[in-house]
Image 1 (cartoon, rainbow, N blue to C red):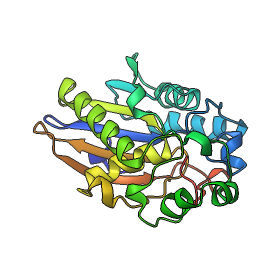
Image 2 (cartoon, rainbow, N blue to C red; image 1 turned 30 degrees about the horizontal axis):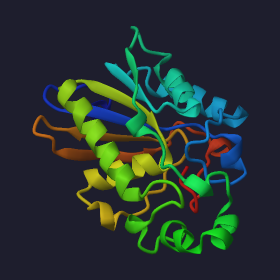
Image 3 (cartoon, rainbow, N blue to C red; image 1 turned 135 degrees about the vertical axis):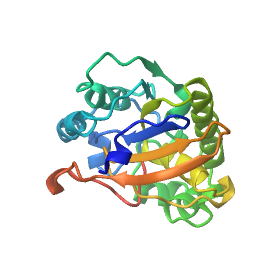
Length: 229
């Protein structure tokens, strides 16, 4: 990573968005929304790799989803900081609520909820997809956008590390690229990959980089492209 990506800035708020490490459900290719599953052994090893990644990036604030897989991932990422970093738990950066599809494989979803399967899993009008008994992708897009813009207003010029989830981070990256909620596209993110977005004082986002996984050896890289959790 270049020095520009490691140093702070004077006016913009810089956000590093980290997807949590893997869980047993990830490895079993099960959709994982609000189920509070812990990191598995591979996920712990992945999380530990974030120590070195952020060792030379001074972080002013840590933010995490309430789910334990994100909380633990943030702990790893902040563990090499030279000074204590305040942490807030923000419910609005948690994962899509998959409702009745939570814990199912894509094959099970295709059988039980074929409309959601086509729209969300197969990317056919993904932006209008709505999980059965859960959230729509537009709802996730809006709450992620509002939460992060609020943090930017409250922490101007600071560096913020957010530990979140695959679909949730994707929605914010779509917003940052200027893509409307209804037109959202899939952005594949590996577990413990890091994306970076800067928010200007007037609330305009700029994507610096997406899905950096250079810190993860091949045997620990995981990204199931038909599933975002």
